[in-house]
Image (cartoon, rainbow, N blue to C red; front, side):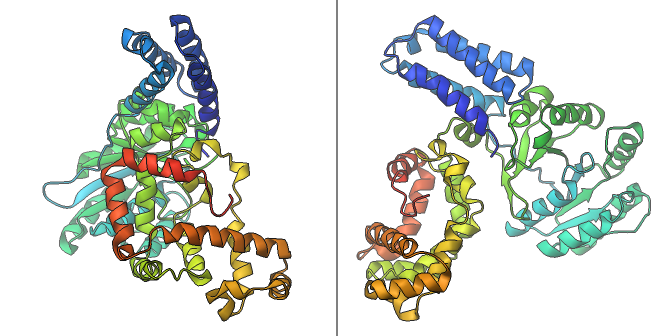
Length: 464
């Protein structure tokens, strides 16, 4: 996961500060030296890391911090604020044309994920009620048009193509088509190269001057570290980009690109790719990313993922059962499905305040749900509905049926009882409306949500 190494280094630096009742200027400078080394190790631009630690140091040695009852926490608060500012401060939204369609020009080097992320962005807008159109302007890469058609079909978005016609002509004709067919967003999937060259930039400049896009988005691969920042700088100088989509942020990347792009180019990261699936695209929130880096979790993104993944019909059925204290193993199967829809278990858990920053990837078992599911499927319908009837002989039969041990069955049943107790807390007369109220309340008051989730985060009913 991105930033894991950086998060660990920062956490170790801050532990020393928290351990001291009072901080001296030397303590702060020593901590910032370690922070700077951690940033450089994470592939953050040298100049950016130097300026960042200088700003934090200047604020941290002020009287308000030094005389505070919790100076260590005050320094962390300053680091959080400066990290947020470094990445742009506020989220940067996609442009909206006064007179549709809004034209978005997607550009980037070959292999950065430009075609896939054009489809991801189109899907995101489609879910919001828009009618996007994908346009195949890459006539050079073998099967580029076919790839766009395939992903377009997968997300249910039409694709405009004219074969190997001049890309400038294709772009111009696509705009006319969009106006005639009521498409309010047009995504131009332009050609890439293995490296930046004059021919590529000339073509992109010609497209820009012909169709006048409202937004030019550069797709860059977070795995390439500082190279990604250099690419962004070159594209911005030659073309004038409006924002960046950072891909593969779920991979084993050090995260330096995310922390450097804004400072080096002056252009914001607008979206981040968080997985291979076509719905794995998130709006980039600097404040939330800063919290993740500092191991504080990301409760708002957690709630948003939950809202997108939860089947409202099943949720209402579950709430009725909770109101009557009738939560059984069939419901547990449904809960596994809902959680898996939220994406990687590792990424989801790391969003939870109070637990995410303390758990390492190797401590999280991504296959736990599959094993639990196999055990439940080995039960009879009656056993799933009334798990209390499962005696030792039934446990032996269930274990043999799924190829596991009786201990595994016991573990699932024990964890189910824990979850049943937790679910009962949301039962009672108001159970039917509890979860929606909680989601609204937590979203409106993220600080309260972090406290709630931080308190409950340590007792995990599934033992991950």
